[in-house]
Length: 102
Image 1 (cartoon, rainbow, N blue to C red):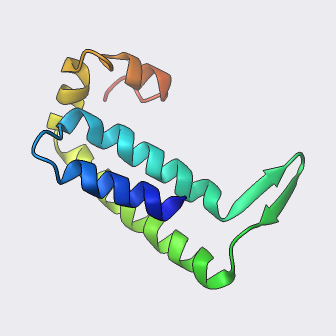
Image 2 (spheres, helix red, strand yellow):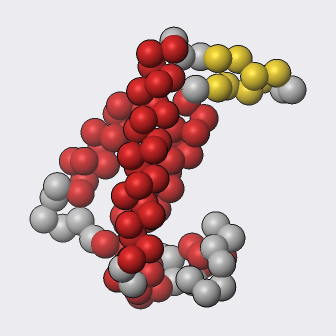
């Protein structure tokens, strides 16, 4: 559920022990959820699963998330945190096909 995912992310990042290395993966997960929320594929067919007002809300949420995601490009801290995190290192960048210059 989309609302639950945003609630979980908000709760997690409001904690004292939240860390910077989890921001980009969380934003990627939320972005993927928003991208697939409006349309659900069954084989070669796509079915609309949300009413139009909800579709509009999801698109606004996706635009807002993308705005903040692009702001992370201005800070090297996110990349450094991912590189230093034992779970991610360069694997996160490789797995998500990020450009080499990142």
